[in-house]
Length: 280
Length: 261
Image (cartoon, rainbow over all chains, first blue to last red; front, side, top):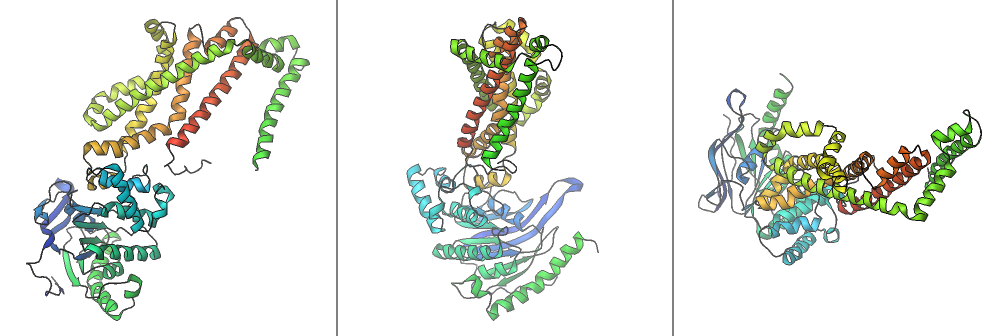
């Protein structure tokens, strides 16, 4: 197997805090003859404060991995650890930003954010006050009373981001969160995410099919193979300086070099997935 | 089409219809006027009768009775439908056991139950309420059941990730979703509550709009039948308007449905 591990091992000291650890994780859907192995023997660590992006062809089980870390899905083999604790059931330490609309459509933007605190036992008045502050931080101070259907796709993502971050989760899991947005909004959301993230540097596991987005945002890009039975085929450290401006960083020569290097790994997998879908 | 123009045309349709009716009742277009009037009455007679209904005040009592029956049937049927719908949706095993019986009960034309309700609840309002309840219950039940079952999996997964326990999921996710489905069927269920009330009255009672119509029919008083029907139609429109107002308030979070204003 061509193994192109390009991790800058200087920072990869095993002594530094590990926020997320996947150990020999396999996930199987269904049972018997119809069973389908989504991911196989995955080993992956995310250190405290590290932003890791996972890229791979469609249907390679990227989201499956996130669901295992979130505790929404139990692996067939292996285990997931969040800050040293094995994940069993929904993980309260994790914040999850979904690709699809996940806001409660019957609640206003403010209620959607404040409910995240209220269910944790924070008094209603205080929860609303803090929700208001968070909505202001994501640039929606004027839209607190709107219902999700009255907001644009980008605004809904901002509410979802506030909803997830207000709980101050230990780790952030993001499943192609900006996928449904147009390119410009996606860039703005990326910048907003980096700005919020740089305040307290949580560990992030960010799944995307967009390689440029992965490079622009992350510290490390993990390339997954085409499914079924997808594995990690390569890892690349992203040594671009921070703070970054996603629209600016794309113009750097180093960015292009990284893009070329990662794409050479990713391309083979994408072609494989493409071939599986459309015959030889 | 502008609003004013649309309204003019709508009035025009009524005008043409009433004018044609009037002409037939005044001139021998279809045989003798006397015969026509016996079967179809005349618009001025009907109008006069309606005016009398209200001038003498006799209609208020009947309207009030019908309204009471409608509201009771709706409230009891809706509460029952919400509770049972919720229970079945959250307990698939219970739902599976009761499934054939629910289908059977729903397949039964409700009018055949009217005599048995008369027997059980007497000729007062409760036999009408019971008939309305059997109609409303199933509409609300099926909608709530669907509403709980069809909560978006993403919204549900997100709510779980936000740390909600079962009770909180019920309150913040399942309940609003079920209610929204119930409210979306509000027009139908309120309409059926009224149908239950009027049909019940028609089949045997001493008060209510159905009774007024039935009584007029019993004496071949076509004018009375038509007058009762017109009052009933406006009564339904008024209730429907109130339902629309309630709906607009309760479902403000909903995107306007495609194809509906």
